[in-house]
Amino acid sequence: MKQEGTTQEDATLFEPLLRTGKGFYVTVAVLVILIAWGAYALVRQWVLGLGVTGMNRPVFWGVYITNFVFFIGLSHAGTLVSAILRIVKAEWRRPFTRAAEAVTVFSLPFGAGSIILDLGRPDRVLNVFLYGRFQSAIMWDVTCISLYLLSSVFYFYLALIPDIAMCRDRLNVGPLRARLYKFLALGWTGSERQYRRLDRLMDIMAVWLTMLVVIVHTVVAWIFGMTIVPGWHGAFIGPYFLVGAIFSGVGAVIITTVILRRVYHLEDYIKPVHINAMALFHLSLSLLWLYFTFVEYFTIFYGNEPAHMVVFNAKFWQEFSPMFWIMVACCFVIPVAILSNPRTRTIAGAVVASIFVNIGMWLERYIVIIPSMARPRMADIGSYMPTWTEWAVTLACFAFFALLYTLFTKLFPVIAVWEMHEARHQSVPEAVGRVRSYMPGATASSLPEE
Amino acid sequence: MGVGEGGIIVLAIMAVASAIFLSMLIWLMQPEKKD
Image 1 (cartoon, helix red, strand yellow):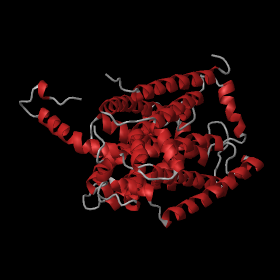
Image 2 (cartoon, rainbow over the protein chains, first blue to last red; image 1 turned 30 degrees about the vertical axis):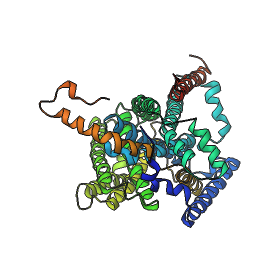
Image 3 (cartoon, rainbow over the protein chains, first blue to last red; image 1 turned 180 degrees about the vertical axis):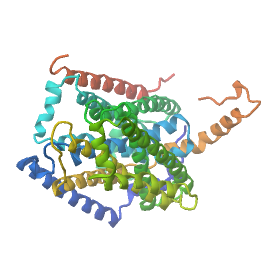
């Protein structure tokens, strides 16, 4: 595939790399302040101990573990949008892929890092490697998440190489950035053979990562499901976590893409038709989430096992019921009401629905973890109220994620330029040939070449 | 399985994955042969 003319065609995509407005500095300043506040809270927690959090006995897992599951879930969207839509050749994926992969790469460290935040002695995380035993579900988690992070970063980088080479060859930037582009481009020349090989590697990685997404979130769920704690122990918790992860992740991709569209004037690339496709996908995930939630709780209710029913009642009508029903409203009632109506399924509607879904999914993680801890089998009823320390650290995690994302958008194109070029010059005729091959009368020899 | 073997397994898996990804990159960037 020739690269000639790519930067002229897609000059808008390079604009954010060359021009920086006041808004960028204000955003970075606000995010840094939030991170500094969180860092202060965290250092204070390390000095004074976990007593400054709301965690106690028997509720020894709180907001940090909620964040762990939430961020890991968020990270699944990148792979899903990019990899699965690539495998099924969904052409509308192109403006989303890079933004989605960035969500994965930048949210995953905060998922894994939340475990360290939860430790009173963070240095003891090394014990996992020094004394880890593979019988423990935590070791399965460490394995899967590490492998997922490595694979996601590689996939993200692979898709970035041609664009980095374009930045190296065509942008007039300072010496430091020029050297960075030169180093990261690895000598990419943009020859036909390199593009062919890149396509093959991307396909292999897409299949590998799709498999990893399923494994990783199932194993994250097994940290809970492999115990005999009421409300956690069940075969269904893996798929339930997985659907929730994809659900919240797709919402995160919609929110970030629309912000990028607005801030960097990408209206010509991210059109209502793209958001509409994602919103419909989100709508189907909302219905799937309701089905999974129903199956999860109806099985517990019908089984009527006393210890499980204590947790069930706490969620449905007692202490945790406001959160539970807000979760149902955020994850099902509001998004379905907005997204099922073509008049409200607009860009703004999709963003509002995605914000509610992400609030709802965070609450879902909270609702899964805390009530089961607060209603243990063999100890008194407990209670949990997060303190400002936990909220400050949580806010700092989100701010850090946003900061990394913002800095990334100033260094690399937020839409894969080479993929847009490929769409214009290769995928349109390929798609026409593919559709024709589906028609009656088409023979195997008329199938387009892969 | 004994104490500490979990960590070794994690590191071994990561090392194998890193080697595979690195070889993919080398294959991608292989210079074209000149006639």
